[in-house]
Amino acid sequence: GKEYALTTQRVTIGRSQQNDISLFREEYLPDNVGALVFQNDAWHWQGAPVVINGVATTQAVLQPGDTLQLGEMRFRFQSRSL
Image 1: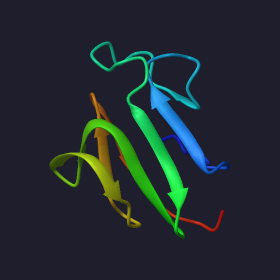
Image 2 (image 1 turned 180 degrees about the vertical axis):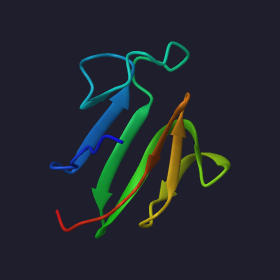
Image 3 (image 1 turned 90 degrees about the vertical axis):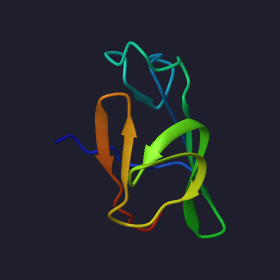
């Protein structure tokens, strides 16, 4: 699989190439789905509903090992210090 380093406090995700993580092959995703945001010493999902650990949600605090599904793409969240 591919790794995406989260090197800023806000990482945008979507189909558009203007996002930090571009999923341009996911034709059913919006141009901007949402963002991974680092705040209060934790990473959060904020945006359109995505499936996290099998549950669709628009906001979540992410824990190491959580699975995010955006379209057909699945990501496993791993945390390291920012």
